[in-house]
Structures are given as C-alpha cells and as structure tokens.
Length: 293
Image (spheres, rainbow, N blue to C red):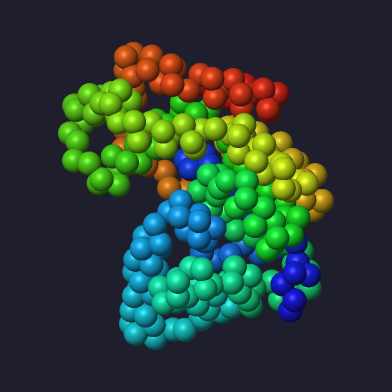
C-alpha cells in the first residue's frame, strides 16, 4: 500500500478537551484507521516541545508490558496488524533518535483495506507547534484534515489541575487543594503559561489554517450535550457518512477522567476569570456559540 494514497486526519489538541475521545470516536469509523498508539507525540518531540527522553521512557515501558504479555499468555489472538504496529512504533521510539524516524513509516501496515480513506492520529501537544513546524507537517502528510477540540479554558484548567492531583505529581491533602491551586494560579508562572498555551484556540486555529485547507474546531461540550451535532459536523468535514446508532455508544465512555474531586472556591474562580476570560471570548467568537462555564 502507498500510504500517500490515503488522506490524513490529525487531532491537534487540546489537553483535557476531548482529544482522546476524538481518537476513539474516529477509530470506530470503518473508513478511518487511527494509529493504535493513542498519542504519537512525533512532531512535538521532533521539535523539542516535549523531551525525547520522555517518549523513549514511555516506549520502553510499553515494550516491557507487551513482552510480558507475550510471555504470560497462552492465547495469541491479540496479535494482529494493530498490535504489530503498536509494538513496532514503540520499538522505533525506544531505539531510534526521533530525527531518524520517518513519520509515514509509523503507519506502515495500517489501512490496507481499500475501504479505508483516512489514516490518523491525535496528539494534543501539536497545538503548540509553530508556523514552520506546521508547514513541515503539511509537507509530510499533504493537505490533511485538522481537528482541534476546544473547551472553556477555565474548565480545561480546572480539569488539568484535577489530573495533576490524580497523577500523584503532588501530595496534597483534600483540605489543602484550594490553597495549592491558588498557589499555582498566583505564583507558578510556568504552569500558568502552559495552561494559557493550551487554551489559546484562536492562535492554534490561525496557525493551522495557514497551512491546511480544512481545519475544524469542535467543542468539548458537544460530547455530552450534542452528540448528533458533533457527528454531523464530522460527517460534513470528512465527507463521510457517520452511523449515529453505531457511534453514539462512544459518547458514554470518557477517557482519562480524573477521579480527584475538587471544585474551586470564589477566590480561585476570580483568579481563573482574570486569567482566561479573554481566551474564552476568542474561542466563543470562533465557534459562534457559548461554552459551558
């Protein structure tokens, strides 16, 4: 199969805004083959947005898990092209410098069926690529369909904080969560800058629109409130029929949901308003609709 005979669809963000859900939803469509590695992190690693060592360590752990699975199992029905691609991708990332890896080679063996029209992946950090880096992506994948999931930047930041608590990055007692959140919002410039980068949908939309003819902004809220509308938007965007009966069950399963309960108090909410109201207005203007507050 000549990979370039297929079109590409690439999810480019945002963190905590449904990018994992997008990957799963698109992967259920019979004419779309999403890469079995949920987030490839190719371009963000290639251009130094994400440390290469982080990708290498993750791939090493993934390889160890799969090797252990092979050694322990007595049933080998899981060995299929997707699993082989998954294993091969992590092997490349663990053993080969990222600049030596051809992006298209990562999709080798996928989408062999003539009925498959799109190959794809979804990596939130691609939202942070700069113009020249996005231009290089265009050179590699052609005029791909670009999908940017967006969410109220205030709610997205709260979700990012909950995920941070749930990930064990910080040991914070429940009664100390409000104080710790306020300390991040008022004193951690790096963390604030990161959250604003992932909430800057207007900038990301403009950057990708310079290089790609088709860029779709999809609101996270539609996952819960308007599944039919989301499927209709994707159908028009990709010129594919979406079987609502078949795909709607995907909307009932959320990926990467944090189990940590936390709701900001008045002081934290006031700080969030001050930090993100401008970005909220920008993305609502782009969508032509309001986002959940």
